[in-house]
Image (cartoon, rainbow, N blue to C red; front, side, top):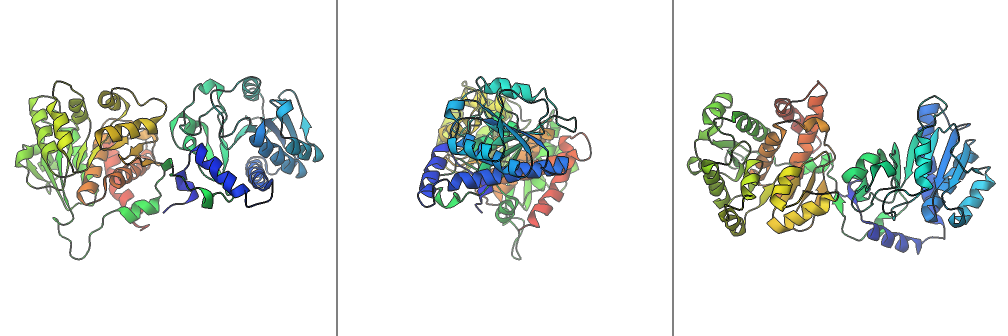
Length: 496
């Protein structure tokens, strides 16, 4: 289900679509549409906070080119509705002439410094073509805004035009957060850009509002990022039917935990239990504890004794000793989809065991790895860096694996170059054991027959919702997340 709000495009594809659209409409149409949408969103913000537009103090930070033109025309709209609108021109000689004329015609005034009262400030310094941190005089103006107040005594509302200035549109990289705009609202045009969704830029964008300017039919390039919707997750989720039994629904195996790390095993089984499979097999040193807590799970001491499964989850709490290495070898040799997490990734990165690389090369069944940043660095040889999507894509291609790179904005990439970003993440999940729950759920989805990339993004999506649900009741533990999963899954499936 592709909609404007769940596909993000790179700047080159946006520019190409804009050129194609502009060839079909009168000159200035796109700018008029963008400016109208920007003014409307500013008016809504003023209405919500101050009760109306009339008499409100609006400051425009105006850069050169079309981004500045959109801003000036939007300022003209707001001035026509009675707002007191002032504009600071970052480069007066390159200001958009027609936009500036329209702004003056509606009573807008150009100023050289930030006024003492600003209800809403509009960042129109640079758009999607900007690179690097803010430069003078824009940097000085943005810093000055932080020192003034709105008429209600609070800080001004910051609205960014297309993107907060100081961020990289295609990657979400922010070279210097001290020289970038932190927006409350970002009004973007035509489609989302990667910086709205990933990297440090996503945290600077605030609430993202998409204005339709007619661009969608002309976006012919491959999306840089996809964002799953709840309806998509519901449509993918495997469901039992009248002829289903515990075997046809899929059997997932977990080679996790040990006698010293029983929690990892129990949490992984809890995650798998919330998934769609009909049976769970556990193999490992925590077998007695799993049997007591989950009597429906079939337990054994070793992978070799576990019996047939349709997918394996391996690594969480497994350790890295000789026994753990033998278990990992057994999992990698299985001709079924595999999820590798935590200790399994540490063992893969150990150059003293080259046979793991041989086993990986020999595999044809799907492989999913679920690193956080430090695990990613061990496996890839370098940390993800600012461009998390490109880093994850590189590792996916290198390992011929689906990569679930954990974080507040979890990224899922496939060897074919497809990239997803999960919109449901929450800092509440940054606590021990939640990754064990995620891995178990992911394994269950794989065992039920879901494709690797869909299984990874569906697991991340539902796991994020469970983290949010758990956080409503106070500090979050992995046990809380596991407990919330069944209810969250039921809510998502109701959408299907």
